Image (tube, rainbow, N blue to C red; front, side, top):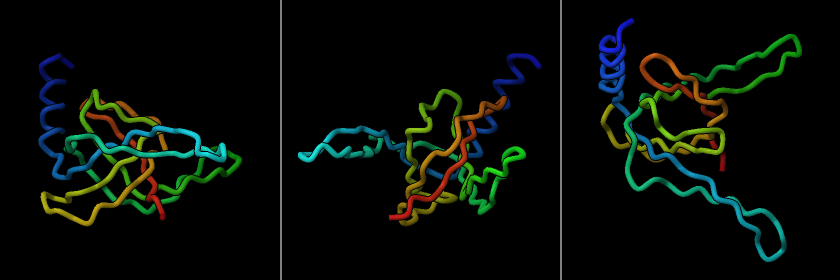
Length: 124
């Protein structure tokens, strides 16, 4: 595959990001009692993304370790996202929706056109 073909695939993928999210960055501190206090701060600007609810259970290996996956997220290559990140979905197909937060539960997987991560809904 040529560099031009790869760039074309990336452009097409990014054009298919019809949803919008905010990436939330984790910062940890200790409260007055020494307990860890985690805070997630949203990025200043929204990130175009492709959000797909799944509701599937993933089985890993012979030990039958299970990971519940509520959604799969696609973002542009080079997006700073990892296991300490959260994602706040704010638009679906260009329409504003009530914000919903998700934990990133997989390392980003790099495809030829975008990054893909698995998400689990944050229950408050």
